[in-house]
Length: 299
Ligand code: GDP
Image (cartoon, rainbow, N blue to C red; front, side, top):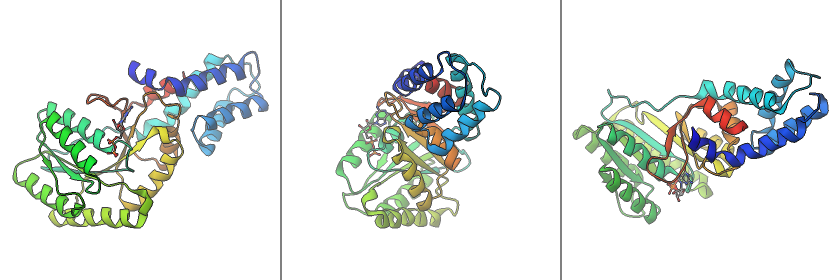
């Protein structure tokens, strides 16, 4: 929690200072409420979500004198109420052997890093983990995943740069089935510049995985970078159309002023949030906890 609180300091500082400025010795009247709503919007919480939170806070407190700390507490409760229904840890389905996870998101969002962190957690728990370097467009992505494989002891299936990602995913799944792997994490390309191609490729990967098991992939985790703010909302929208996103990981919540975007996304899409990234290190993936996040955000 301390780590998250430090990470969200820039997000919470803006909110906290703003709240103190707005509320010092003032009643919760329309002007103050408008300022509060503006403050939430500038914290990337999103227009409709900010309006909803403000209205809820006003409901029992309208025209009353409120101390900044009371507002912070009320804000934390409202944010937690939005986040609690989507708080859902990733659970490994032991009956699958392997549980196949497709990891999607735009380049640079932290897919490869998140795969490495997840691999570490499950390898530490004694599970057999395998990785597939399905972002075949970038040599660096293949190399990065191989490095995470070495760090975690998980075998990494690769193909040459420009190789067929769907074919690779199929072979990795076959091999993982044959050798009793518990968890297969498949990295994918995330070039949003060419949406048609991105869609076609992800659809093809999904189609070939289904040849081995109609339920595969068993999870499709979308990785979103908190520092991109409102762009993360567009990404959730786009990837939601391409694949059946079963959960989110939000990365780079260490040191961003834009952490509020997670609240906007939770409210808009209702997608389960599995975990958050709070650093580049192998242990910097935390299970998502609604109230901790809400308190760290509201200062
Ligand atoms: P990919 O292109 O989606 O696979 O993204 P990468 O996993 O290669 O990550 C892109 C950059 O973001 C790398 O420099 C990572 O170290 C960094 N990164 C990933 N997750 C986090 C995080 O939670 N916090 C911070 N500060 N950096 C992160």
